[in-house]
Amino acid sequence: MNRVRVEAAPDGRGVTLRLTGPQHELLCRSAQAFCSLLPEGPGRDLALGPGGADLVELLAPSEGDAEGSVTVVVTSEQLHAIHAMLTTLLVLVPSELTFMQQVGYFRENAAGMAAGLRRAAGRLA
Image (tube, rainbow, N blue to C red; front, side):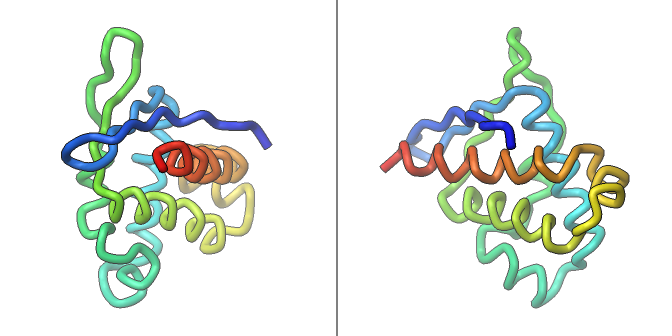
């Protein structure tokens, strides 16, 4: 699996994630696929926790900076929800082909992103 480096820094509002264009696109498409597979309700609430309420809007496509990076400010609960979304999506869609069709990325990309988020959170401590 590729090692994915996610840039994260503490921010007065929470945590600032500086994502590459492909990382941001992976999160956007993952959120859309996740929400289509797991409708609003107790199941989604259990999977994402309190930070998952507006995940699709939080990760909505946006313009990157001159280097193609996208900055997203999240709370610790939202960061947890993003990680939970990625890991739950891997369970919800165990087939590589179906995952690629629904998300547009390989399962290993999502797993690498989840691991990168975990490492970034660890560097914040």
